[in-house]
Image (cartoon, rainbow, N blue to C red):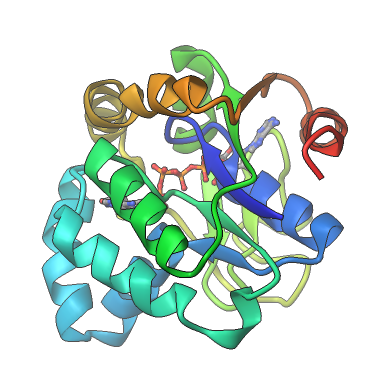
Length: 216
Ligand code: AP5
């Protein structure tokens, strides 16, 4: 299955991507994670991406598309993949269609996670991420046993630079302006499936898995 997850920042894409990818046995490709890894390693790509990410803006299309093209050329995505956070603009969606057509394939489905803006702010302002294993926690919804320490690996938890309230509001504006048009783009192609992403993580996963059954 070749699947895209779309939704506003904080909709739970990263959380669900991990769970759904394990369920479908496909690799998860998160452009946000790839950028953050490059930032942490201080690569030229990371240095370029950082100024956009910290401001809550999108990294330019040509940079992002080139990075995804390289990743989709890898052997492990031949039988399917889950894209988290890409595409994020109509030009990115068109580039992905063209890239998959070159590979003789196409997307199976685009899963939209639907949440309201107040919930986005609650989720992002409480998010904490493990610096070692990358697991995503939440100070209220899914707190670790020990403050600031990952239950899974003992790693130190950190708050993302772009999770400050004013940046969150700006990311939401960017979402409605540049990413929300993808909903119509994929609806017109007949491959859009929307699910209610409010409520506990496991309920959202169950809804996602049930919705995806029709597309396998
Ligand atoms: P990216 O990392 O993709 O950020 P995002 O889309 O803004 O999404 P988030 O990671 O913030 O949220 P999420 O939906 O994954 O939510 P999560 O599961 O963590 O991108 C970051 C930046 O990179 C962008 O701003 C841009 O600069 C750049 N970038 C990336 N891709 C790009 C592209 N294609 N083009 C250009 N630039 C790009 O959940 C959030 C919190 O809520 C967590 O604490 C979690 O525990 C909690 N939570 C999750 N689900 C639930 C639930 N059901 N109930 C209660 N709490 C929940």
